[in-house]
Amino acid sequence: MDDRTRNRTDVDSALLGHSTYRSLGEQKLSPAEERFEKARRTVGLWLAPLVTVVFLALPLDLAGNQQTLAGILLGVIVLWITEAVPIPVGGLIGVALIVLLGVVPADDALEPFGSSTIFTFIGAFILAQAMLKHGIARRFAFRILALPRVGSSTFGVIIAFGGITCLLSAFVSNTATVAMLLPTAVGILAVIAKLLQDRNMVAEDFDPLRLRVGAALMLMLAYGASVGGLLTPVGSPPNLIGRGLIEKATGERISFAQWFLVALPICLLMFVVLVVILLLLNRPEIRRIEGVSDYIAQQRAEMGPLSRAEKNTLIAFGVTVTLWIAPGIVAVGFGNDSAVYDAVSGRLNEGVVAVLGAALLYLLPTDWSNREFTLRWRDAAAIDWGTIVLFGTGIIFGSLLASTGLAKTLGQSASQSLGLSSTVTITIFAVLLAVVVSETTSNTASASVVVPIVIPIAVAAGANPFVPALAATFAASFGFMLPVSTPQNAVVYGSGAVSITRMIRSGISFDVVGAILILVGLPVMVAVLGLG
Image 1 (spheres, helix red, strand yellow):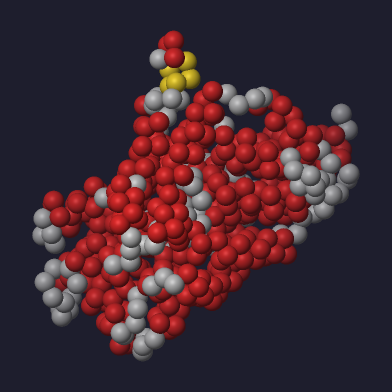
Image 2 (cartoon, rainbow, N blue to C red):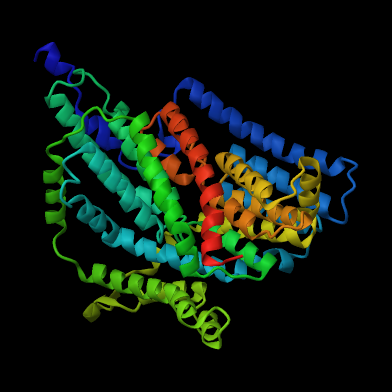
């Protein structure tokens, strides 16, 4: 064996071994990275209680239990940022302290866990579990990639993957969508890497995990999921949080259809901008590719025809989506203030519809003779309960910020100190604050913290809080610079195909342009549809 053959990179072993997300403990960290992670978590364990205690001891002029709530929230935010404990556990610690320190009684603190929004997520996660288990989402991805001219160029593959991710994440968890598509993306990246190798376009000992085309493909998956998550109220946790807070503050409920119509043109523009940014900053090493089409055809052939479980999953998903959009269709025909709309929307509550759709998966049989159904209970037990817990604690903090008057106090102080006196300036402040916060903590936590602050700022300034609060809700789903900004960022970073420098460079560019699109496009769409 000559040196040339000995040094030749084995693409499969170098690349396909990283096809699923690896937690930090499973990754090979450099000594510097390991020291940083240990220091970050250790600092969080000490800093969180210190921040809370110091804040509670300050002689602040805050009424009632506002100071206690603020101190607890600051400590929880430190836990979220440093990940000293798992993020959902940080929220639970905060909820326990709220009761122990007498901010509110236990029943009042835990009441948001019974909201219909929680059941919306439980049902949606179970539906997503069925799509992942039975391969519906993967089948859909390969169907799109098999379209003419898509699989023959790197640009086509990257754009198609972005489109697939956007559509799926509008209904399925962003993280689940990315995790499901990641192995397929890595498989295609392996084909491209081997093509570059065969054409002698790379060094013999090249690292396929550092190809620009791989970074563009992986970042498109992560960022495309965040963009697609904005399309529907159930696409991302911040959407439901923001919508609920807006309804409570203004008395106006945004229907499923109305949300979709507002978000659609903004998301389309964001997607175009995303394509341009990623392809400019991570220009693929090769444009024309052969072999990917064959790989896609092979994978589709191996999947075969739709199984009974896949058909059942499609039925349950179709019924759920139809019932979700039904109130919006009724509103178009009869108006939001009609008795027909009130009757339909009251009965077709999104949480009830979600759990009904999930229940269908346990009623539609795959093998009646053995009483086997589309899902088993252990499948439901495997859904992301941590996100649901985090979501519930986020609602609790958002609710208490309003009920204790702390959000109003913060809003009035910010309005006076920053001179926020118009809807435009308040909206700019809301978007910037949400983007900054979402870079360092979860999108759910960002929406839970920022939206309750923005609403009283608008009220104090005599402005309608609808647009600023909705803009903050949209911007809370941003955060593209760091692996910790969103779970989907962590998933693609864990693949090893995206360096931190490429993620920061691409992410900050999309942060800026995306924020501008929200500031310009959202008020226009709200005015066109007559909302707010």
